Length: 267
Ligand SMILES: [Mg+2]
Image (cartoon, rainbow, N blue to C red; front, side, top):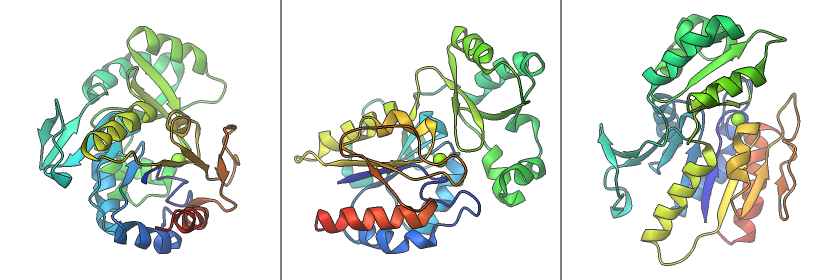
């Protein structure tokens, strides 16, 4: 089994970002060496802190599929066409943050949008409930720009203009995100799944957990999709055979549904 999980509102609670209610399932996942692949709109710096806190060193996907990071030497994998940075082999389906910001600055006043690059760490902290230190890590971006939009603005128009420039707009639990058009969480999950399949004889069952629209692309391609209810918006509107819906939001729902699956597969 390979588990792909979103963070905010999925493994982490929407409001307090805690995951301790998921510790029983996480413990079993770690003991069984089941790969737990984080798939998030967060940055590499933010994910590094969370991986350390959980105690895993599996590959991870940041900024909505903009970058895919493997610790160098992870399970002796040989990752073709990987770039290297700070102890990682990494793949980069996304654009550079500088390119993304150049476009964003052109359209900022036209569409009434404000991105993380226009905000101080304190402003991001007040929008997200993160601490100012955590917000500084959230600002440390490599591939994409999260942004807010004034009510009544033309999201469709912005999407169309982004497409002309080779970019796209997606939506997470709190923010819109300006991303490269050739990236999404689903494409990145496919790449990671294929790399595992190249190195393992047995085809692993893939499990995916998410709560928001930007999770749809990977929830549609895993063997077992799991929806975690958003505390305000409820379940993502999605139906597939075998889909599971957690009864509780955040880490409690994550734990309950994963413990059930681990039981079922005797892990
Ligand atoms: Mg989420």
